[in-house]
Length: 220
Image 1 (cartoon, rainbow, N blue to C red):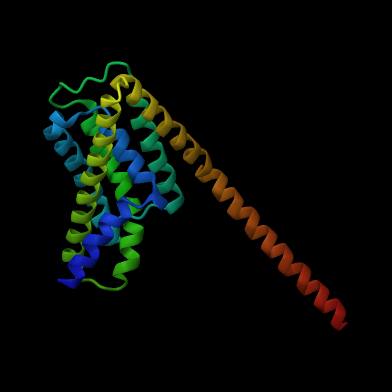
Image 2 (cartoon, helix red, strand yellow):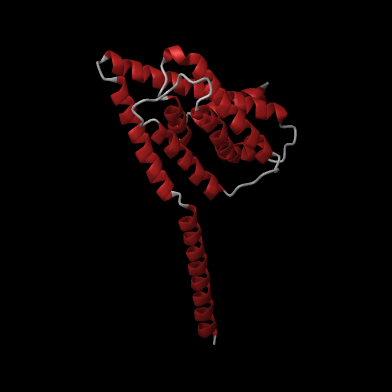
């Protein structure tokens, strides 16, 4: 029971942690087009995202798939950017039974699951009895997602009561999220990061060789 509570609370804290704002931005962009009366659609949307990240989270924990962290972090930023840009349309059709946003949530959930797996792997260590911990962690993520949505809709409701046009507030918030996501994409550009790592390795080798030459000359 202690393990269940630990992994459950860790799941909530991980997705709602402002230090790792990626997932908060994605959930906000995902649900920005909805209102309280759309709670069923929101629940389906969040569930689709949960199914997506649960699958890749499990596959990653069991070492069935393994994507380099630099690519995972970059792709997470891309999912935020695409979702936020989709909110910028003046007319956001949420009346369709299966609109494109549901498929976004499912597919993008696959990518976010790889991001969640890094923390979970570090907690599990060599423990192989992980089904209960995996379920608790995913449940915590689900509760955290719902809390984020509640906060978002509460803020949008407050804006509406202050007389701010809903369309204007949606475009402003999605534009801000898109700008942040674009900055993340540029910062996390994987080819640049790989090039920096390569240059660091070269500099380290050069420094090491220089020191070795210096000491060998000193001894001579």
